[in-house]
Length: 310
Image (cartoon, rainbow, N blue to C red; front, side, top):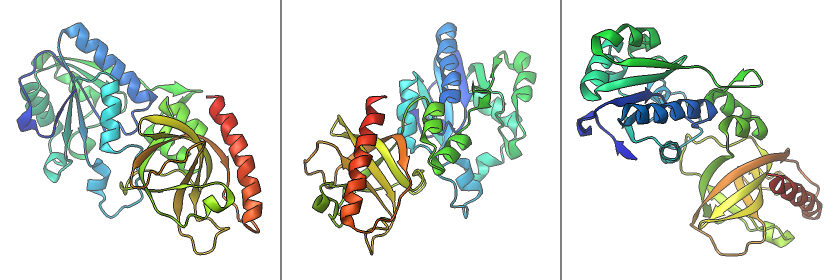
Protein backbone atom coordinates (compact mmCIF):
# COMPACT_ATOMS: atom_id res chain seq x y z
CA UNK A 1 0.00 0.00 0.00
CA UNK A 2 1.34 3.40 -0.99
CA UNK A 3 0.80 6.38 1.32
CA UNK A 4 0.82 9.99 0.11
CA UNK A 5 0.83 13.04 2.40
CA UNK A 6 0.34 15.68 -0.28
CA UNK A 7 -1.56 16.03 -3.54
CA UNK A 8 1.75 17.15 -5.06
CA UNK A 9 3.14 13.64 -4.53
CA UNK A 10 0.43 11.86 -6.48
CA UNK A 11 1.47 9.82 -9.53
CA UNK A 12 -0.57 9.64 -12.71
CA UNK A 13 -3.44 7.27 -12.02
CA UNK A 14 -5.68 5.52 -14.51
CA UNK A 15 -9.08 3.92 -13.90
CA UNK A 16 -9.03 5.10 -10.29
CA UNK A 17 -11.66 3.76 -7.93
CA UNK A 18 -12.03 6.28 -5.12
CA UNK A 19 -13.55 6.67 -1.68
CA UNK A 20 -13.18 9.25 1.07
CA UNK A 21 -13.79 9.50 4.80
CA UNK A 22 -12.25 9.61 8.26
CA UNK A 23 -12.70 5.82 8.64
CA UNK A 24 -12.10 5.98 12.40
CA UNK A 25 -12.12 2.40 13.66
CA UNK A 26 -12.38 0.82 10.18
CA UNK A 27 -15.51 -0.90 11.53
CA UNK A 28 -17.86 -3.30 9.74
CA UNK A 29 -19.63 -0.44 7.98
CA UNK A 30 -16.31 0.86 6.67
CA UNK A 31 -15.26 -2.65 5.71
CA UNK A 32 -18.34 -2.93 3.51
CA UNK A 33 -17.16 0.14 1.58
CA UNK A 34 -13.57 -1.12 1.40
CA UNK A 35 -14.62 -4.50 0.01
CA UNK A 36 -16.58 -2.77 -2.74
CA UNK A 37 -13.60 -0.48 -3.35
CA UNK A 38 -11.31 -3.45 -3.88
CA UNK A 39 -13.80 -5.37 -6.01
CA UNK A 40 -14.50 -2.40 -8.28
CA UNK A 41 -10.81 -1.56 -8.73
CA UNK A 42 -10.16 -5.12 -9.89
CA UNK A 43 -13.17 -4.92 -12.23
CA UNK A 44 -11.94 -1.60 -13.67
CA UNK A 45 -8.37 -2.82 -14.06
CA UNK A 46 -7.21 0.16 -12.06
CA UNK A 47 -6.12 1.14 -8.56
CA UNK A 48 -8.04 1.97 -5.41
CA UNK A 49 -7.42 5.36 -3.78
CA UNK A 50 -8.73 6.32 -0.35
CA UNK A 51 -8.62 9.91 0.87
CA UNK A 52 -8.59 10.48 4.61
CA UNK A 53 -7.56 13.27 6.96
CA UNK A 54 -5.21 13.58 9.89
CA UNK A 55 -5.79 15.04 12.37
CA UNK A 56 -9.53 14.38 12.49
CA UNK A 57 -11.45 17.32 10.93
CA UNK A 58 -13.34 17.93 14.17
CA UNK A 59 -10.06 18.56 15.99
CA UNK A 60 -9.34 21.33 13.48
CA UNK A 61 -12.83 22.81 13.44
CA UNK A 62 -13.19 22.76 17.24
CA UNK A 63 -9.62 23.07 18.63
CA UNK A 64 -10.83 23.85 22.16
CA UNK A 65 -13.01 20.74 22.31
CA UNK A 66 -10.93 18.09 24.05
CA UNK A 67 -13.79 15.63 24.31
CA UNK A 68 -13.28 13.82 21.01
CA UNK A 69 -11.47 10.54 21.52
CA UNK A 70 -10.59 8.43 18.51
CA UNK A 71 -10.79 4.69 18.04
CA UNK A 72 -7.50 4.62 16.17
CA UNK A 73 -4.20 6.39 15.81
CA UNK A 74 -3.15 7.11 12.24
CA UNK A 75 -0.78 4.13 12.23
CA UNK A 76 -3.54 1.81 13.49
CA UNK A 77 -5.91 3.06 10.79
CA UNK A 78 -3.34 2.61 8.03
CA UNK A 79 -2.65 -0.94 9.22
CA UNK A 80 -6.34 -1.85 8.94
CA UNK A 81 -6.67 -0.17 5.52
CA UNK A 82 -3.73 -2.19 4.23
CA UNK A 83 -5.30 -5.40 5.55
CA UNK A 84 -8.46 -4.46 3.64
CA UNK A 85 -6.48 -4.37 0.38
CA UNK A 86 -6.45 -0.63 -0.31
CA UNK A 87 -3.79 0.21 -2.94
CA UNK A 88 -3.23 3.90 -2.17
CA UNK A 89 -4.06 6.15 0.78
CA UNK A 90 -3.87 9.93 0.59
CA UNK A 91 -3.53 11.40 4.09
CA UNK A 92 -4.14 15.14 4.07
CA UNK A 93 -4.12 17.65 6.91
CA UNK A 94 -7.56 19.17 7.32
CA UNK A 95 -6.76 22.86 6.82
CA UNK A 96 -8.77 26.05 6.61
CA UNK A 97 -8.12 26.15 2.88
CA UNK A 98 -9.41 22.64 2.40
CA UNK A 99 -12.45 23.26 4.62
CA UNK A 100 -13.44 26.18 2.38
CA UNK A 101 -13.12 24.29 -0.91
CA UNK A 102 -16.32 24.30 -2.92
CA UNK A 103 -17.58 20.75 -3.46
CA UNK A 104 -17.68 21.40 -7.23
CA UNK A 105 -13.98 22.35 -7.16
CA UNK A 106 -13.17 19.21 -5.19
CA UNK A 107 -14.80 17.11 -7.87
CA UNK A 108 -13.12 18.88 -10.80
CA UNK A 109 -9.66 19.61 -9.38
CA UNK A 110 -9.10 16.58 -7.20
CA UNK A 111 -11.24 13.69 -8.38
CA UNK A 112 -11.05 14.41 -12.11
CA UNK A 113 -7.77 16.24 -12.68
CA UNK A 114 -5.58 14.70 -9.95
CA UNK A 115 -7.02 11.19 -9.67
CA UNK A 116 -8.55 10.60 -13.09
CA UNK A 117 -11.44 8.96 -11.27
CA UNK A 118 -13.24 6.05 -12.93
CA UNK A 119 -15.59 5.17 -10.06
CA UNK A 120 -16.42 6.97 -6.81
CA UNK A 121 -17.73 4.80 -4.00
CA UNK A 122 -19.51 6.83 -1.36
CA UNK A 123 -21.26 5.96 1.89
CA UNK A 124 -24.95 6.80 1.97
CA UNK A 125 -24.50 9.72 4.39
CA UNK A 126 -21.12 11.08 3.26
CA UNK A 127 -20.74 14.85 2.91
CA UNK A 128 -17.81 16.86 1.58
CA UNK A 129 -16.68 20.36 0.64
CA UNK A 130 -17.39 23.72 2.22
CA UNK A 131 -19.95 23.51 5.02
CA UNK A 132 -20.48 19.85 4.04
CA UNK A 133 -22.48 21.03 1.05
CA UNK A 134 -21.43 18.21 -1.26
CA UNK A 135 -23.25 14.89 -1.28
CA UNK A 136 -23.81 11.87 -3.48
CA UNK A 137 -26.40 13.71 -5.57
CA UNK A 138 -23.86 16.37 -6.50
CA UNK A 139 -21.35 13.71 -7.46
CA UNK A 140 -23.93 11.99 -9.66
CA UNK A 141 -24.84 15.25 -11.38
CA UNK A 142 -21.34 15.35 -12.91
CA UNK A 143 -21.21 11.70 -14.02
CA UNK A 144 -21.88 12.31 -17.72
CA UNK A 145 -19.77 15.48 -17.93
CA UNK A 146 -16.64 13.87 -16.50
CA UNK A 147 -17.30 10.27 -17.56
CA UNK A 148 -17.16 8.59 -14.15
CA UNK A 149 -19.72 6.61 -12.21
CA UNK A 150 -20.88 6.86 -8.61
CA UNK A 151 -21.78 3.88 -6.43
CA UNK A 152 -23.64 4.40 -3.18
CA UNK A 153 -23.03 2.08 -0.22
CA UNK A 154 -25.89 1.77 2.25
CA UNK A 155 -25.53 1.40 6.01
CA UNK A 156 -24.29 -1.81 7.62
CA UNK A 157 -26.79 -2.88 10.25
CA UNK A 158 -26.58 -5.30 13.15
CA UNK A 159 -29.91 -6.09 14.84
CA UNK A 160 -31.42 -3.18 12.84
CA UNK A 161 -28.92 -0.72 14.37
CA UNK A 162 -26.70 1.20 11.96
CA UNK A 163 -23.02 0.91 12.80
CA UNK A 164 -21.07 4.13 13.30
CA UNK A 165 -17.80 5.21 14.89
CA UNK A 166 -19.77 7.35 17.34
CA UNK A 167 -21.79 4.37 18.57
CA UNK A 168 -18.61 2.35 19.07
CA UNK A 169 -16.98 5.20 21.01
CA UNK A 170 -20.04 5.60 23.19
CA UNK A 171 -20.14 1.84 23.87
CA UNK A 172 -16.52 1.79 25.02
CA UNK A 173 -17.01 4.85 27.21
CA UNK A 174 -19.61 2.96 29.25
CA UNK A 175 -17.70 -0.35 29.27
CA UNK A 176 -19.91 -2.08 26.70
CA UNK A 177 -17.05 -3.98 25.09
CA UNK A 178 -19.33 -6.63 23.58
CA UNK A 179 -21.18 -4.11 21.41
CA UNK A 180 -18.01 -2.26 20.43
CA UNK A 181 -16.22 -5.45 19.37
CA UNK A 182 -19.26 -6.68 17.46
CA UNK A 183 -19.47 -3.43 15.48
CA UNK A 184 -15.71 -3.36 14.87
CA UNK A 185 -15.60 -6.97 13.76
CA UNK A 186 -12.55 -7.48 15.99
CA UNK A 187 -11.36 -6.68 19.51
CA UNK A 188 -10.79 -3.05 20.36
CA UNK A 189 -7.10 -2.43 20.94
CA UNK A 190 -4.61 0.18 22.06
CA UNK A 191 -0.88 0.30 22.72
CA UNK A 192 1.14 1.68 25.60
CA UNK A 193 4.67 1.84 26.91
CA UNK A 194 5.35 -0.12 30.09
CA UNK A 195 6.51 2.28 32.83
CA UNK A 196 7.42 1.91 36.48
CA UNK A 197 4.59 1.96 39.02
CA UNK A 198 4.43 1.41 42.78
CA UNK A 199 4.93 -2.36 42.31
CA UNK A 200 2.29 -3.23 44.93
CA UNK A 201 0.69 -5.85 42.70
CA UNK A 202 3.65 -8.19 42.99
CA UNK A 203 3.34 -8.16 46.81
CA UNK A 204 -0.05 -9.89 46.53
CA UNK A 205 0.87 -12.19 43.65
CA UNK A 206 -0.49 -10.10 40.79
CA UNK A 207 2.33 -8.04 39.26
CA UNK A 208 1.11 -5.50 36.72
CA UNK A 209 2.50 -3.67 33.73
CA UNK A 210 1.66 0.03 34.08
CA UNK A 211 0.92 1.54 30.68
CA UNK A 212 1.63 5.04 29.45
CA UNK A 213 -0.50 6.08 26.46
CA UNK A 214 1.29 8.54 24.21
CA UNK A 215 -1.63 9.51 22.00
CA UNK A 216 -3.78 12.12 23.80
CA UNK A 217 -6.82 11.57 21.58
CA UNK A 218 -6.81 7.76 21.73
CA UNK A 219 -9.97 6.48 23.38
CA UNK A 220 -9.44 4.50 26.59
CA UNK A 221 -12.45 2.39 27.71
CA UNK A 222 -14.43 3.19 30.84
CA UNK A 223 -13.02 2.74 34.33
CA UNK A 224 -13.29 -0.90 35.33
CA UNK A 225 -11.74 -4.36 35.14
CA UNK A 226 -11.42 -6.21 31.83
CA UNK A 227 -10.34 -9.51 30.35
CA UNK A 228 -7.66 -8.79 27.77
CA UNK A 229 -5.09 -10.29 25.49
CA UNK A 230 -1.61 -8.74 25.45
CA UNK A 231 0.78 -8.75 22.51
CA UNK A 232 4.39 -8.65 23.69
CA UNK A 233 7.24 -9.04 21.19
CA UNK A 234 4.89 -10.72 18.76
CA UNK A 235 3.53 -13.24 21.30
CA UNK A 236 -0.01 -13.08 22.65
CA UNK A 237 -0.82 -13.75 26.32
CA UNK A 238 -4.03 -13.69 28.30
CA UNK A 239 -4.44 -11.13 31.03
CA UNK A 240 -6.70 -8.84 33.03
CA UNK A 241 -6.62 -5.07 33.08
CA UNK A 242 -7.67 -2.41 35.57
CA UNK A 243 -8.44 1.08 34.30
CA UNK A 244 -9.04 3.59 37.06
CA UNK A 245 -7.85 5.17 40.28
CA UNK A 246 -7.08 2.08 42.40
CA UNK A 247 -9.21 3.20 45.36
CA UNK A 248 -7.89 0.40 47.60
CA UNK A 249 -4.35 1.83 47.40
CA UNK A 250 -4.01 5.33 48.92
CA UNK A 251 -2.21 7.97 46.88
CA UNK A 252 -2.54 6.33 43.48
CA UNK A 253 -3.61 8.37 40.48
CA UNK A 254 -5.43 7.24 37.36
CA UNK A 255 -3.61 4.34 35.76
CA UNK A 256 -3.92 1.50 33.28
CA UNK A 257 -2.47 -1.69 34.75
CA UNK A 258 -2.32 -5.13 33.13
CA UNK A 259 -1.63 -8.42 34.86
CA UNK A 260 -0.25 -10.70 32.13
CA UNK A 261 -0.92 -14.37 32.88
CA UNK A 262 2.02 -16.79 33.05
CA UNK A 263 4.52 -14.06 32.25
CA UNK A 264 7.57 -12.84 34.15
CA UNK A 265 9.89 -11.13 31.64
CA UNK A 266 11.21 -7.60 32.18
CA UNK A 267 9.33 -5.42 29.69
CA UNK A 268 9.92 -1.93 31.09
CA UNK A 269 10.03 0.69 28.30
CA UNK A 270 8.60 -1.75 25.78
CA UNK A 271 5.42 -0.94 23.86
CA UNK A 272 2.78 -3.65 24.18
CA UNK A 273 -0.62 -3.93 22.52
CA UNK A 274 -3.78 -4.62 24.50
CA UNK A 275 -6.83 -6.30 22.95
CA UNK A 276 -9.93 -5.75 25.07
CA UNK A 277 -11.87 -9.02 25.25
CA UNK A 278 -14.64 -8.39 27.78
CA UNK A 279 -15.84 -6.28 30.68
CA UNK A 280 -15.53 -8.05 34.04
CA UNK A 281 -16.68 -5.63 36.75
CA UNK A 282 -16.65 -2.07 38.08
CA UNK A 283 -13.61 -0.85 39.95
CA UNK A 284 -14.25 -1.14 43.70
CA UNK A 285 -12.59 -0.14 46.95
CA UNK A 286 -11.70 -3.08 49.20
CA UNK A 287 -10.91 -3.07 52.89
CA UNK A 288 -7.31 -4.20 52.51
CA UNK A 289 -4.85 -5.81 50.11
CA UNK A 290 -5.75 -9.33 51.26
CA UNK A 291 -9.38 -8.77 50.31
CA UNK A 292 -8.25 -7.31 46.98
CA UNK A 293 -6.11 -10.42 46.32
CA UNK A 294 -9.14 -12.68 46.79
CA UNK A 295 -11.16 -10.66 44.29
CA UNK A 296 -8.27 -10.69 41.82
CA UNK A 297 -8.24 -14.47 42.03
CA UNK A 298 -11.88 -14.50 40.96
CA UNK A 299 -11.18 -11.88 38.27
CA UNK A 300 -8.46 -14.08 36.80
CA UNK A 301 -10.80 -17.09 36.69
CA UNK A 302 -13.48 -15.02 34.93
CA UNK A 303 -10.95 -13.50 32.54
CA UNK A 304 -9.62 -16.92 31.54
CA UNK A 305 -13.16 -18.11 30.83
CA UNK A 306 -13.82 -15.10 28.56
CA UNK A 307 -10.54 -15.56 26.72
CA UNK A 308 -11.05 -19.30 26.23
CA UNK A 309 -14.47 -18.66 24.66
CA UNK A 310 -13.17 -16.30 21.99
